[in-house]
Image 1: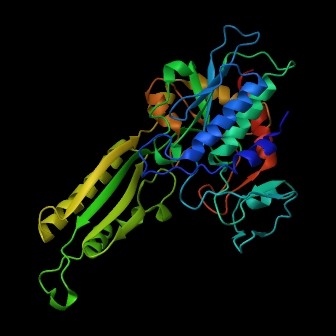
Image 2 (image 1 turned 135 degrees about the horizontal axis):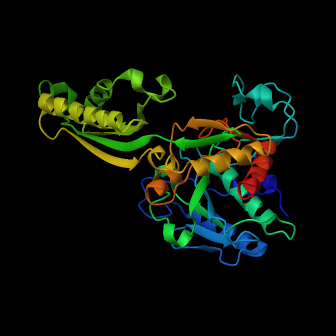
Length: 398
């Protein structure tokens, strides 16, 4: 049997950064490479119906054993990683963390985080400092795969039907778009895509994306008076019209935000890309209205058509659905406590595939993987947390 650590180290070395600019699914070829790798491993461990479809979605199931009347439960993780920093991962293993500053190969340091003292003495996996680690969500993939191997062993405990899926393109908001809910066959599910050990989440943001395009008029600067419209400067005006206190760096808990993720431009054309988030749907609609208002103000100032705004809804707060099924949350809490882990029930300041799946008939709260500092060069995960999560998943089916 492979350990969860061995699997994780193997998976994170496959480049699976998703790309929003590509409209195909999966959006990058590396995701299909990992998908085919997972199907091969699933078949080798005895999952006869393991398969990957043309869009890169991996499915498989384990028949019930001694619990024929039990619900069919799904476990889901995503294969892609964030494009916030490069994704060509070279993981580093710290056998026994001394509690001090973690110095990575290229001078990046991990220090000052409140969770670090509790990790002293544990085996950690970190990045080289050049990339994300990919624990979001290859830790979830490794934990589910290790769980499956354990549940296929002769001495596995009795359980209901186990349904497993690995999705592409979650990081760009498309992970659930082509998910085959009826074919998956679960009565309810859990995404294994959270952070610190013990997290249990059934609230997430309502989310939208926004592309702001500015059309300028480029005139030689020597004769530009009263004629030039500098698109880059108009874009800066747009950004300045949004409340600065509602940026991610100034918000927490249930506070929503406007987040500028990308910008480009010159005098003739400019573009801003935003994500909008709020747990309260009404407040998200107010943020969308603010984007349209800023557009209207600038068009009155510089001429109709100077600024255009393209808004697109991404996902909704799954609380609306999941809270109708308290027994699903109770099952997860019981599984954590059975392994001496106190559940940490909190709202996600983000989203998971489970948000969209919940609205498509598959109630799907989110479980921890054990990792920290996702989407950055300082990402890390303790090996004991991954091992404990495998135990939690086994208890989930007890």
